[in-house]
Image (cartoon, rainbow, N blue to C red; front, side, top):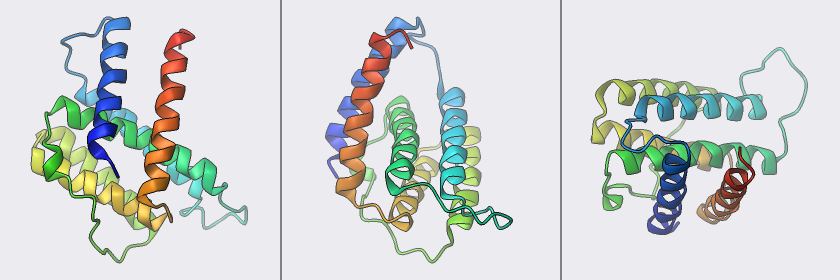
Length: 163
């Protein structure tokens, strides 16, 4: 996964949004963490991993991947805001024996912890565990990068359309 390129693409989008929405110089970490948590909930909803009461099947892998990269956009954006060193973000995910439900709960906890501390080490753990979630969902680095690039283009088009 080419994190350098992905961070570059995200920074271009962030700069555009900050300028066009008149939020230059504003600290948006709290908003971005909440946006990440909302996207995390949308992703969990598409996987249906917690819906023990329902027989309905999860959404397609394509839909789940799109929701996953929505969250990834916000993590990259937060990383930019805290000036994270990409070298510290190891894309070789650790082996974690976890259910999807437990992984989602962990990510909510980690994102809340990061929002309180704004600590780089808390962000690194959050980022790593989000990559673990991607693996648990069956996605390769290539899947994630390709979907991210496509969604980045969609997000630029949305800005063109006055989103």
